Amino acid sequence: MQALTERLTATLFQPFSFGGQQLPNRLVMAPMTRNHSPDGIPTEEVATYYRRRAEGGIGLIITEGTYINHPSANGYPNVPAFYGEKALAGWKHVVDEVHAAGGKIIPQLWHVGLIRRPGTEPDPSIPGVGPMEIQEEGKVVVRAMTQADINAIIEAFAQAAKDAERIGFDGIELHGAHEYLLDNFLWEGTNQREDKYGGSIENRVRFPVEIVKAVRAVVSKDFPIVFRFSQWKQRDYAARLANTPDELKRILQPLADAGVDVFHASTRRFWEAEFADSPDNLATWTHRLTNKPVITVGSVGLDKAFSLEQFQGRDYPSIQFEQLRTLADQLEQNKFDLVAVGRALLSEPEWANKVRSGHYETIKNFSHEALTTLVV
Image (tube, rainbow, N blue to C red):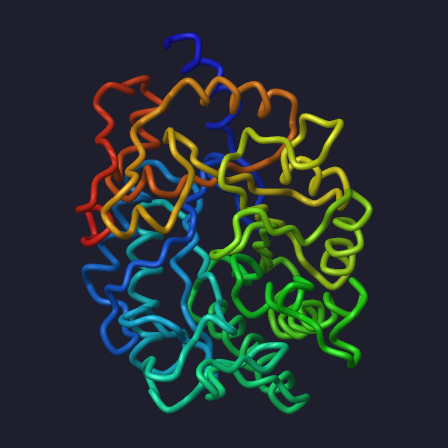
């Protein structure tokens, strides 16, 4: 393992430019919903949780999804908001704690789209919104968005980004993956509109592009905008936004042109090829097609891909280090720029430090406790 540690030190643990700042290494904490912010307000425990990952050696932290100021934006209990005096004060404390530990941090700005159902906080009477209407048992549970809805949500994303810079965050991430609102528009499976926001790839990417442009207009030019996207969906792991590299470029290039600085290519296993006749993963293709820095992610340090069963007490992953050799290989070939670690960090705040020092055998295994509590 000594040879692996030396290779990772020479690649993974090297600094990287991020906007006008420098990350101490290439490791990113992936965004993961935690449900520990009652009334949408991040608590002292949340601040401690994020600070511990910075102390543990992570260069850039992406927060859990935090919902923007729109009545339909939230879809889950006790997740954090990104508007209002109390919630933003809570986030300011999180930022200060992470910075005090020497880390960088960005919020993941989020609208859950068609995932929301009536009965969800903060206003249980509000249905979800998305590209198309959805009815269940004869009742509208997701309302088709009007142009007024689109305009309001664009403004809410822009205001959240502006507030993020104001309270000291080091950039922002727009959540465009996993069957949430921006992804609802990108994927033809959930977008069958007949106006300028539906139909062709160029039309389906229009709404996310307008959000990126609005954000870029209200933040500093060196304030990074990260855009997370995925082929897979929560309820369809085989779903695809793009079936070919050309289709992927038609999605990503307009976003890059609009102002995205970094793409975050979400996959369930980072080592898997994305398209036929090439060994390259989604992040590598994204880097090649856009010439933008890219974050890769997907089961780093674990032997099982993400599944909803893990949140139901089944199909837990275990520690796995052999695929770190594949990670080292691909870093040495400059196939991507940054590496996001998700579930492995839930149970082991010191994951990065232990990998860097070669103390793999002391890394704590994934557990149900890590899903239900904030391990610090």
